[in-house]
Structures are given as structure tokens and as C-alpha cells.
Length: 97
Image (cartoon, rainbow, N blue to C red; front, top):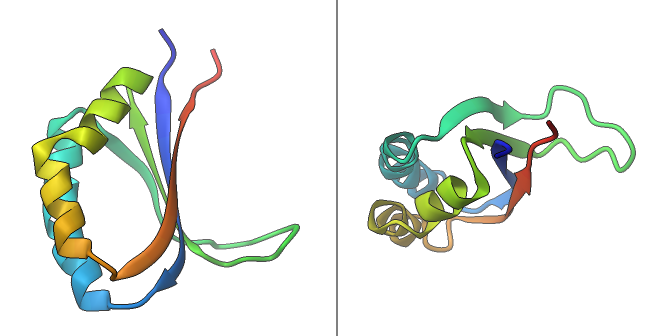
């Protein structure tokens, strides 16, 4: 079974306070579901389209584990706290063996 990576790309942060409230809940929810943060922050260097956006990469043992983390009640509570505080994309991709 391949590892999976949850990749979140933030195109806009509308409310830093909502993002902070989300992070306070989301971090423990993700960690308790087996997620391991491997990168988090604004891009250090950007190529192609040159978008210097906040990016978060979280590693999970499987796609099922990443999906379960996202769908968990604890993470859903974090999403309520986030509300319209950001505009972003989240993708779950399978790792390469």
C-alpha cells in the first residue's frame, strides 16, 4: 500500500484569525488520524506561474487514512472554525513506490 499526501494550496487568506482557530483544531485532528506534517508555509521559490502561495503537505500511511482524517468529526469541526477565512484547494495524491 502506498503512502498518501494531502496537499493544501492557499490562494487567499481572508481572515488570519479564522485560520489560526482552524489550525488550533486541525493540527491535533490530523495528527490523531496518523497525519505527519512534512511541509508548511509560504513557498520559498516558485517557478512556472510564479505563485508564492501558502502550501501544506501532510503524509499519511494510505489514501484511506488521509480521506478518513478529512472526513473525521474532529477535522470537520476545524472546517467550521475556518469558515470563509481562506480560499484553497486540497488534494490527496498517492505516493510513488
